[in-house]
Image (cartoon, rainbow, N blue to C red; front, side, top):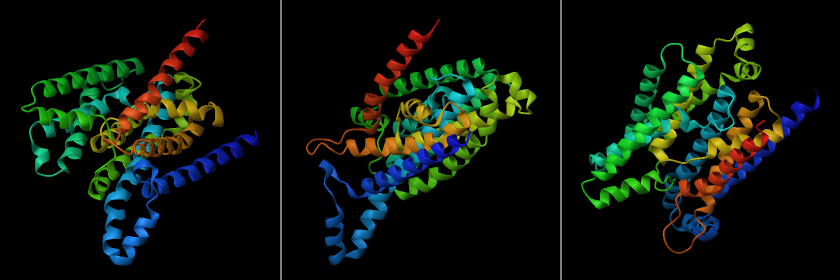
Length: 334
């Protein structure tokens, strides 16, 4: 009993150090893995204002979004797997991701993004909130876990169909191409204004999800046991779903769809910290941040041609892992 907390703290400390290292690398590593520290120093000697502007308005927003989005996806993925008692659960299950994507796509479709790029995350957040509202209406006041899953799947499918319809009816191939590239997920060309806009949604959402940590441990013993210990399933479910919707919806609204992080990271962390859902939340958040920052470094490796899209890289890493989980579950089934 005395060794588990030390092990968890060691894992968290190691992940914190790794995330900090990757965060600094995100700022100072450019295309082809080129180190930019010397270039920044040279620019600072001639024009310090330009050097500071490049770091604060170009390099820093990308690193901050990688940190925030990865932590959000990892945290929400771990919480949903604990809430639903399903190892294949991930943040997109509640429909917030697809709702946010649809909201942002509609901004592109109607040409509002030409006025200001800030309208894209605004549309994404509104789409995520609309998806959560529909989820609440479909699930009812006292929803079961199965009802929430089915409602989330229905919302995701409907939002995906509307997104495809927007692509189909796009007034020009350039508009359609812009929508497709945005949906592939990326951290490039983001500003501090976008970071400040989504930060409150991510913060409130993450706090709501984290507030369920004691209840998640109780739920591991069953809903009846959790109710006996004084936890309200309605309150726990509402906080987890609303928090996931706000946090993940805000993340998708500014970066596009970055999949599989919330699914993969909790499974990678679970052998290190054990099966308790509460002890998995912080490591999953740190591991998600590290994974997204590392993947964002990978997309910069090609020297020639367009930069890879972050969502493509995470999908290439996550899809085989997802298939492996399914095969393992099939082998372990009685």
